[in-house]
Length: 543
Image (cartoon, rainbow, N blue to C red; front, side, top):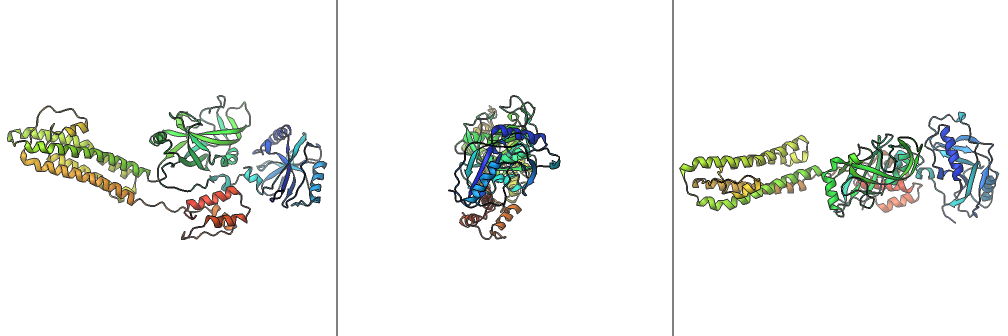
């Protein structure tokens, strides 16, 4: 005997359920309760009670029926007469079962959204109502909400798993993006639709949104479609924003390094495609197929032109300052090239010291100097380009750390040093690094200019050190993310359950204290998870 009371119901048989749904649709009702959930409640006892289940079927007569609103949650029911169900309710009451009502009126709830339907103009369903064997189970306070039959903005429009944040985790690369569009026909037919486009209704998405949480993300190695065997990530949050479903989660970066690197490098060309089962459609002959019910089983990352909806998007980044990392990587690569120049200078210094001074060869030396300047110029221009890009994108962190200024100084130093040095094919490292054609003419340099060559070497080495300092500075000065605030809905949920959050964030709530408060409340599990996730993201939940 359950300690959570007793709930007894009889579900409509499949034939009766289908006939009732067909009638409701013809009367203008939408967002109907799925056929397999249509039932008549017999006992709803908050007091634990044992009642031997009855099997067999019960058929209700066709007279005495009416369509009415019930309760304050938008339910619309078909009331009917059933002496068998009425007798069963009285039997349960006699052995001690409680009831929220003094009388029993059998009914079937077929929608929680009557919209603008005029109930006075609705002709009641007169078809056969046949109910299957009794089903006994513990009571559920918010059955309709947990089944997704009532659209609530807090529960259905913003869902998230309580996944602890672990910055720097080697196997968790965060991603987010648009999974699909709502109430819009797809751009092309998805797989399994027999060549027809599809349209996901908002009501179907609102009911199915919780099924996205914890589902896998997969990808083919060529990003051309779905591969449910290659699960490279997990969905941890889903929200409805406007006409789109937005999802977040993380990819298994350490387990699938090649795939994740490809996703990072080609993310502007990639999008999402959903995977669903348990699909209900209004008309199997229509195009597009209008999906009124479904269960999400996952998502795939693929090229946008391969997806049913071309306007999905994907953003995959290691951390919030991903642009900072990209620019620093570019500077680091340039630093490697500058290091190659330094090595070349070292290899040529000994040869330059042995070259005899010759005024007659000054013209040749000047020409060689121009060649060196021409080889340095592309790298100086690249540095200026990086500086301009950082200014254009408004990356404040780079400006505060002096990266824009440093890049331009590096460009000036390279040009100045190259202008004072005269190098030719005696500098093979530079030619190899720059992929230039080999110079055949031997070039000699005035011995008096060897000090300038040394200065070039010192300046290039200094620039390499400066790059390393810039990278270290970027790590030290990275600004911490702002503490996120709680939504009014979460704050209200906490207040209703007697939980107070310090306004200034000076203290954190303990998980044990939350669970203790929840234990004495009627808050359903999914909302408890949502509250914990919101507190964790806001930095208000103790580890």
